[in-house]
Image (cartoon, rainbow, N blue to C red):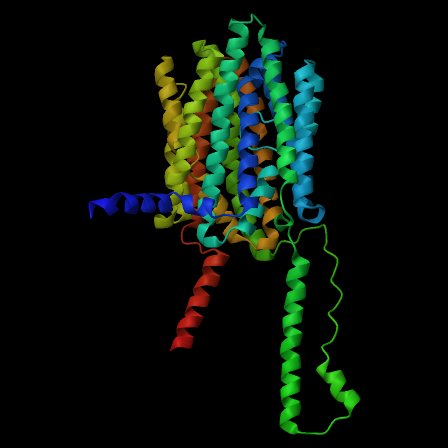
Amino acid sequence: MAGYSLPTFGNILANELGLYSILGSSRDTKLLCLQRFVRLFAYGASTLILALYLSSVHVSDARIGLFMSMTLWGDVIISFALTLFADGLGRRRTLMLGSALMTASGTVFAFSGHYWILVAASILGVISPSGNEIGPFKAIEESTLSQLSPPAIRSDIFAWYTLLGNAGTACGTIICGWLVQWLQTLNGWKPTRAYRVIFSIYAFLGIVKFALSLMLSKNCELEPEKQQYQAVTELNDVEIESLLSSDDEDETPKAPSQSKSKSTPPPPPPVPKRSRWPSISPTSRSILLKLCFLFAFDSLASGLVPASWITYFFTNKFSLPEGTIGTLFFITSIIAALSNLVASSISKRIGLLKTMVFTHLPSAIFLALIPVPSNAFVAMTFLILRSCTQNMDQAPRQAFLAAAVLPSERTAVMGVVNVVKTLSQSGGPVVTGWLAGMKKFWIAFLLAGALKAGYDLAMLKMFLGYRSREEVAGGEGEEGRERGAA
């Protein structure tokens, strides 16, 4: 008995953590998760030093906040345009285009220190001021993963997708932090020169991501034409069989030409040309409007305290070196990554919505407490406690949204959601920059915590008891099987 306890426990643990789901997933699913790791590695590396880099080239706090907001405004335009037409233009092509923009931005930051040139590069390219997702990638990847993954394991896939992203951020922050500190300490480089090395690495990782996008197969593309053709073909087969059987029963002699014409299936109708404009059903629009309203509050709160501003806060208030800050964010990112696996297991027991709310609410409280202590260790403790549940709502939220809309709507819907979130988030950095200039940085943390707590409670009130389309369809199918058995 004792000899079988460990394997049994290991199988149970692997199943709860979704390990079998990700290992058994398709090659495209693994490539998409790897792309997210590479991308978030680059975001984590650049975010750690973004505000410090701008300060080193003599940009004021208010203009740093304006820079971050304008970056997010530019992302709204680029992301909306690319995700809206991604299914029409091709998902793989859109991902490659985004990777090219990412490389272009990193190259400009590596060689220029002019404020407005950097603004243009961040608006037209891809630079993340928060360390989180920016650009068209997330919506396209989530839609593709929803298409490639059956509903039963979708939350597991999203959990690993989120985990690998957090792991990429963690690795990017710690490597960036200690590399910058090493270049300044051992080589005697000025901070600005050391920061530009990080942006050179950022540009190179954009090339790596471009190569990974090339490796994706055509299974990642949406193919409504094939589905429509199959439906028409099956319908014609049924009609033909019905006609032939009725002919046999009547035993009416037919001319050879007549019999041949009736036994020959009609040619399939011409395949309609796929529109580049997405179509969203009324039911999905209703859900989309509610979610966009709620996500806007949460994103505004996130925009008030992005990772770049938190780094700037700890550097200026406690005089922490880049290596220490990189290690701090490495710890928080690893904890956040591991918490996503726990969230997947919890969601299987209490549901997606309750997991989203009950795990996210404590992080909002710890966020508001970060600026309260005057001791660096206590403030870092609150930041680490926040990370324990900060991202536990992400995988359930992605699965919740994917199940609420039709498969053909997911790319457009997720693109709209990400645009609304980014647009709301863009209002935060400029407010924080204004508060930082007045030495009132702590207000941003308190306001962000209050907004996030309000989002959690409103989400619970509006969607408690809601059943997604997949849940309703699954219930109707089960009832039909029960009636058939009876």
